[in-house]
Length: 64
Image (cartoon, rainbow, N blue to C red; front, side):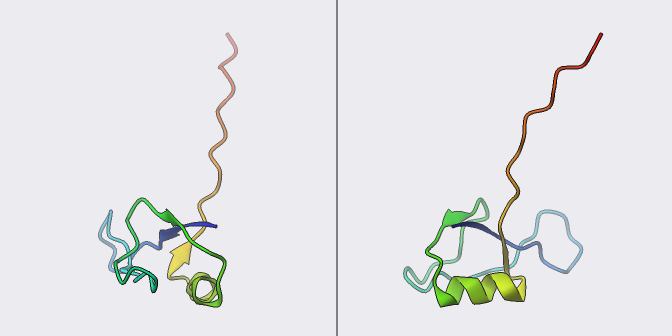
């Protein structure tokens, strides 16, 4: 599953939570990463530490 770190609650734009990947010991990149659907990542998702982004759908062309 692809996850992104959740926005930080400090109100500053562009700040995200620092979530450590247990396999690498490194923080999850701000651009997100593909991670296994393991109990660790499912807990992070349930706690709101990470989010699953919604797919972006292309807009229809404007009618003239």
